[in-house]
Amino acid sequence: MFLPVFRAGPCLLAALLLATPCAFAHGPEHPLPPAAPADDPVSGFVEAFDKAVAAGLPADLAVPVDVHRPRRDVAAAQLVVQDALNIEVDIPGMPAGRMYRGLFGGREAAITRIGTQVDISVPVRDGVDVTGYTAGSPDVLRERVRNPDAPEPGRRPVPRPRDESHVMPGWPFDMDPPLSSEQASLGRGVRAIEDPLAYSPHFFVLIHDDLDARPLHIHSVFAAWWLTELARKILPAENIRMSYRYRIPGVTDMPYGYPEALDNWHETVKAYAELYGLAHGKTYKHKYLLMSRDRPMTDAFGVAFEGGNEAMASTEGRVNIVAHEFGHTLGAEHGLAERRYEGWWWCVTNMATGTDDLIGDCHRFSYDNARRIRSYLRHGPDPEVLAERSFSMILN
Image 1 (tube, rainbow, N blue to C red):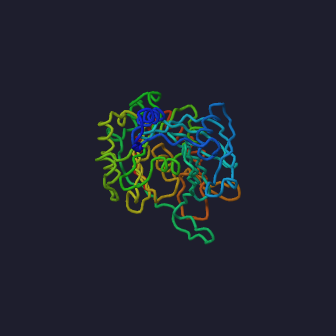
Image 2 (image 1 turned 90 degrees about the horizontal axis):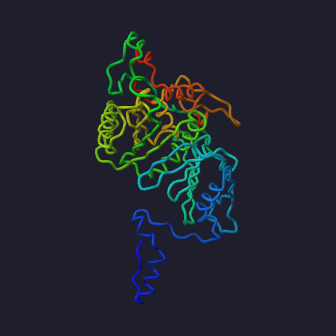
Image 3 (image 1 turned 180 degrees about the vertical axis):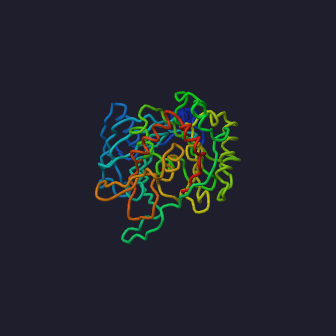
C-alpha cells in the first residue's frame, strides 16, 4: 500500500494517517482489504459470514455467485453452514483457519474460512467446484476443476486407466526390519513407539517449487472435501490439523520422477523434521505429502508408503489424488474400495483403481477403508501385519 504525497497542512496528513492506523501492521504482503461498501453483498460477504457463524449454527446466508453482471441481476444461492469441524488449516502468513460443513445450493459443501477468505468446495461427479470470496473485493472466484480424464462438455468420453497401480517393497520408518511373529506376540513394534493419545493427526502438504499455485487453491480443490468427511464421519473425536508449506530450499525443490523418488522424499522429510523440530520419527500420526506439477514417478500420479508417513502426488491426477495417497498412509487399501449408486449414476470411492472412465467419483472412503483408517489412527499399524510383510510402496 502506498500513501500519495499531499501538499497539505499537518492536520490533513495526520488525519490521513490516523484513518488507517493498522495498514502497516500487516506488512506489504498482507495489507488490510479495502473497506466494503455497506450495500455490496459481494465485498461484504466474508463479514456477513463471520457474523452469521458467530450468531450460532446452523446459519443461512444468501450468497451472491455472479458479479460479472449488473448488480440488479446478481444471482444468489443459499449457503447453509451446518457444523464447525475439528480441523485447523495452517497456511504461512495467515491466522489459523477453520472449516465448516454445509450445503451450497442444496449440495454438500466444505467451507474454509482463513485470513480474508471464504472458500466453498463442492465435490461433483467429475471434479470439484470452488467458489471463493475475499473481504472487500468485488470479485468472486468461480472455478470447476475437472479430472484430467473427464470428457469435455458435449463430447463422448474416451476410456483410459484411472491410475497405474502396483506394489513395490519399501521400509518407510526409521525402525528395525519387520518383527518376527514371536516378537509381535510380545507386543513390540510400532504400537510401542508412542502412546496413541500422545499426538493428533497432522497432515503436511509441501508444495513443490514447480507448482505456481496458491496453498488455499490446493486446499480447496484437493483436500477440503475429504477432510470434512474425515472429521465428521471417520474421526469425529480427533483434532485434525492441515499444514501447507512452500518455497523451502532443499525440501520443496527436490528432483523427482525416478524410481527412488519416494525413498529420497523420506530422507528429505527426516532432515526437514529435524531442522524444524517436528515429530516425524516419534509418531505414525504425522503425514507428509509432496505436491508436484508432474508425476512423481514414471506412470504414477501418486505414490505412498502403505501405513508409512510419506507420500507424493501430482496435480495432473484426479482431484481425489491427495485423499488417495494420504489414505494409503492411513492403512486404506485398493481392494476395499467400493462401487456405489448415488444420486443418478454409479461412482467409486477414493481408493478405487480401474479403467471405467464412465464411473464418477463418490468423494468418500468406503465403509471398510473408513474402519481401517479409524483403527490405524487409534492403535497404529498392527505388529502382526508387520511380521508378515514390510510396509510397501504403492504406486497409483
